[in-house]
Image (cartoon, rainbow, N blue to C red; front, side):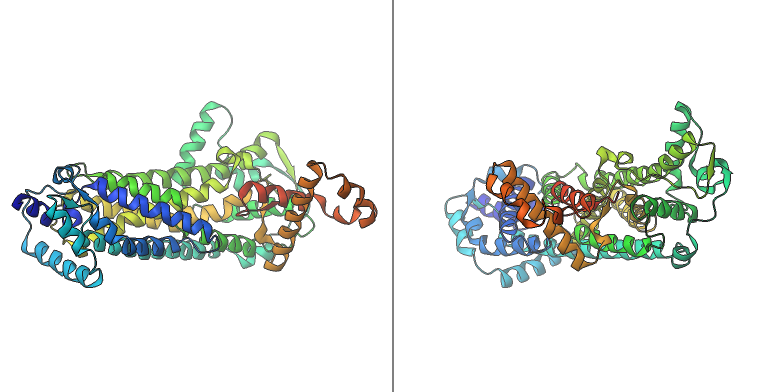
Length: 480
């Protein structure tokens, strides 16, 4: 019994709690929270953190009464039990323990019940409380990182030129010029052939580190967007539209989706002593960020190549042709999902560091060696700066080069009206396909053969099509 009591005492903190137990408990809480959030669809994504924290409190008694054999707790530990703690470490753990017992006073009977059976609780009260703290730190860090990235990225976009370009960047007089006379072509067109493609990718990789979006890039893509989607409105405020899209995307970035929780659970599971998991995963967001930045720069290069390969001279202004074909799987939205993952993973790394620092101290075994800590922090800072000052401005401009523009081009009132119309048309189309002959027969009485529903057909049909494709998260529109 003494051995069991010692094991239970050592397992009081997450340092000596097997990672598979932490991952299993978190998985269960996340699944229940996701189900609840799905039922309450209109709640924000960050409400998941509140659900998880609440569920940990509600089910702490059940978790305490779930007893397991002590031998199950000796595998996949973040820290080896042989490691002696420093005085600073012990003091920090005792303070956290007192706070935990004050806030989570229930469940002690469950621990005593397990000890009487010669077993230990699945997760101790102190470990549950430490999970509470980690969830809070993760939420705060993720929000701070997301807000700072969007603000700095938006400021960089606004710094480009912007209001003066909206006035001065109109189509000029029609004159013939060699394609190489355009700055946009000279910056991005690297010739033809297999070697030029390799050079183009290398140039795209390097360019993301300096002048990611130049004045000629912005003016050319802006004109291409207007001539493709808003030909009848040459004074269209592209910058205002772009910032509205960025604000809408922020709502996605600041949330925490299910696939991000899968990532959290996996790396909580792999946080085993000696594996240095959190050192290796620090490279994942960096690699993804470099890949995203390179791809966005390469989209600009593809726009230049498409023009240069088809024309030797151009009459008037240089106009590029936006297309979804330039993006991975033909979906510009994938870039946003990757940026979402990058920002969250970076926030997870930094949050985990500060949580360990405040909970266990810098010298804790779960913190790891200094040689692994410093590179993680440096990589985190690099990711935040690169994403804010290079990748986010690139994303804001380049992702408008898809085949469709987004619903943010309308004000909120018009958005609701058009999306509502698209839903009604989709429902009516479903009735027709289901053999609703009565509605087909009644169509002439609604205004001359349904003519009232054919105004602006490409606008409405494309809105409906994209709304169905993107789950109403992104609705693209094309004007013929």
